[in-house]
Amino acid sequence: MKFKPVKIIKRGNSYQLYYYNPRGERRRISVGNDHQQAQRLAVKFTDWLIVGKDPDHEHKMATQKEQGKAVTLHEFYPIFMQRHGKLQSNNMQKAYHYRFQNLKRCPMLIDVPVCEISRSVLLDYMHIRMDQDGVKAATVNKEASLVKCMLFKAVEWDILDRNPLQGMRLFKESEKRRVNITPEQAGKLIDELPEPVSHITELAIYSGFRKENILNLCVEQITFHDLTPTAEVDLVIKGGRVETFPLGPAAVDLLNRVINGRTKGYIFINTLTGTRYVNINKTFDRAVRKVGLTVNGTKLRFHDLRHVFGTWLLKQGVSLDILRELLGHRDRDTTDRYATLNRAEVGKFLKLMPRIKKSRSLDDQVKLTQTDTNCVKSTSFLCQQSS
View: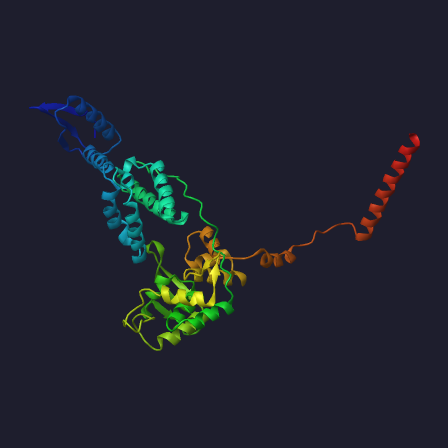
């Protein structure tokens, strides 16, 4: 279609733009009573038409974006949870809510338009939170990551043109937890725990699953194999993704004993409530203190059992790439934090280093060394005579 220029026509006290959209339809839009504004919009409409875009649609999108820039982080949070948060696991949604409750304590951060949030404001919040509340870098990093995620989504949903926190570095966290729990120590811990918490702990070590996944595990999620003592289980992991994980003979043997022929329902049932466990921390921590298990100077946590799973398999020669799949990680850097080896254990692999193949024999090298020594002595003798 032949391009036709955008016309500005005054109707009463207001101005209107007349144009033909890319489909050849004649359109009219009111742009207010400011003539200069009407001229600026006419130029924009012309640019959009030249590249084949519909000015009406583009103008509405631009207006929505300008309105969106005025939305505060506090106002944006419900939108974020509705469009993104609900796709995450229940555990992650609770974590989002808890972190945002702490962010709400800083009006300079959540009561300003999202387009005005700066790195300096977020960094100030992180420093004050650590100083006043005594929390660690890992805690404030998670809260800052929530803000970064919200602004990333604001860009994705055309509310912001760019993320002002893009590339912002978080605080350096403490060294990774080096979990060196032996099978004997794990056995002592399980012996101290009552059933079925002992079974929950045992499955955590044999599977590497997160606590929430285990507590929420149902019989229907597991597919037992007929020909081998293995199985598969469907889990909702971080990010709301549903993935299938394998189970080895040790885990399958434990599950068969616990399920005991049942065909549905939660695998681990709290006898007091008749349903799944909500929290086992007190029982687990009591047994840990009694056995005396520590990691980096602090008590062993239930989540450390994932580290035990990764470390034991790594010591058996399983590669980090395979561990990444078994733990459900997206990158190897995360997996590396879950696998612990010390230098003494790594040192045994040095015997695999191939020897350098030399063309000269050992006798030839000895003769060559003697010849070099005699040359040096002769040179020294001549130097003494000349002097």
